[in-house]
Amino acid sequence: MSVYVVVGSKQDLNYAWKCIELLDKFGIEYRLFIASAHRTPEKIEEILQLVGENHIQVIIAMAGYAAHLLGVLGARTLCPVIGVPLASSPLLGLVALFSIVQMP
Image (tube, rainbow, N blue to C red; front, side, top):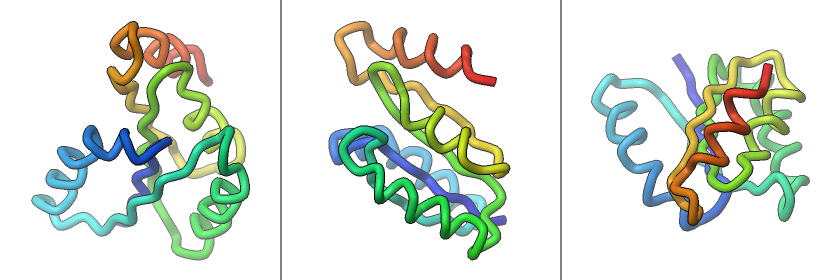
């Protein structure tokens, strides 16, 4: 299995390490990206092109605040996107959770 882990900013890496540890533990190949749906949309496009080329089976996307990263990735690929709300905002991830659960 091949997985992409995408976080919205360098600050979100603090939350991603536990995910990376689990992927390592289970021997799952992964690649970690830092990309913002708002600040680096060209990076999002690069990641999405690589999904098909590298036969990625799932994307784990982690974001705080309104969590637009997950919707942008999910809207542009047939690959399943798992959204992980991060407690990086003053509302401790509640807004991110609401954004994620409202996505199809």
